[in-house]
Image 1 (cartoon, rainbow, N blue to C red):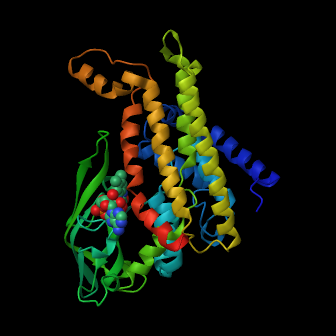
Image 2: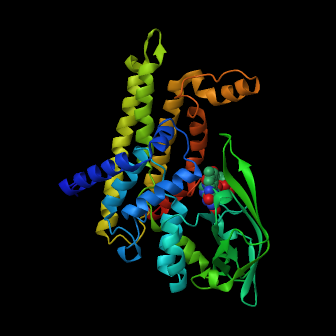
Image 3: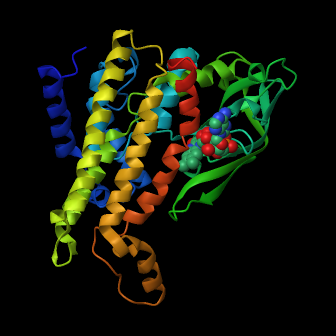
Length: 401
Ligand SMILES: Cc1cc2nc3c(=O)[nH]c(=O)nc-3n(C[C@H](O)[C@H](O)[C@H](O)COP(=O)(O)OP(=O)(O)OC[C@H]3O[C@@H](n4cnc5c(N)ncnc54)[C@H](O)[C@@H]3O)c2cc1C
């Protein structure tokens, strides 16, 4: 297998990089360079810029407004977007509900939702996890009972990322509590978040941000035409969604951006009177992470090439390696960045205290988001299927244990 990029792929990377450099709004780029998470409007604006270029639905077939890119091109695009760093495309819209509707949706669902999803006219969220149903998702208990031409939904979801921003939620609900197998009584419903009976309560995470929510459903009436696929067959839809697009799962571009930034900041930070960048122990640590990033890049290329050669339509369990190694690298590189900041990495909290005491903010501009980013990334080995579960998949499906 040839693990080098072809001249066309190298040219494609350059095209993507140039487009991002020329079109990403300056303020967004600057905030993201300093480690701030993009605001809702910045994500919407960037998705619309990409959509005008024809790149937002980077992984959809061309007939639905997608790019028709190869798996390698998709990987390059995602990596360049993360490394810029530009706001990530809203995965709920682009890699989750879009491909699901293309595969399982009715013509009316496709016509209505797909153009809106890729232009971020509708913000989607994912209502899968519940208290007591995370890794063991099939034990979910949110009920949907048929009442004429509606389902009536009652129950609770948890860890619903960005539900407070969302217009719509794709949800797994139990439609047959008496099915012989738990997986057989589940359906996949599209729920308008403005429907009476939907309540979103914030969960503030350890980094101090509001990203997560609990979502409660009390007698929420959902038209039957919002069922995706067959009734009671939602498990197949969910499996397709979870396995469908794993090209960007390593999020290598983010790790590369954090390592790059560590080196930049290490030129400013001084240790024993000299710039930290000259310290041998620091240089060894950076080198180790850069080797890890290179190894991951080659593994990613190997997995993505094999996936493309196999026709690009069947998820490969080896991609679980990318999730495990990718999140380890993300966490290690954010830890490096925080260590470079030292006590100043805690500036966000110092600044809050200072604001309360009416004192000026403390710390240089590069500092405030270091600790929050580090803390938020602890969750990377949990969301999208925990790393322990990924290792179980590898044990069974790849190693045959
Ligand atoms: C930041 C963040 C964002 C999220 N966003 C969403 C979202 O938008 N929508 C959504 O539906 N969900 C979301 N989730 C939920 C996420 O999918 C679950 O947290 C995850 O699937 C784990 O489930 P759990 O939290 O119930 O933990 P559990 O499944 O209870 O696991 C607890 C621990 O036990 C381990 N464990 C469990 N089963 C096994 C096993 N069989 N073998 C070995 N170890 C095991 C796990 O690895 C973990 O360490 C998000 C979570 C986080 C942290």
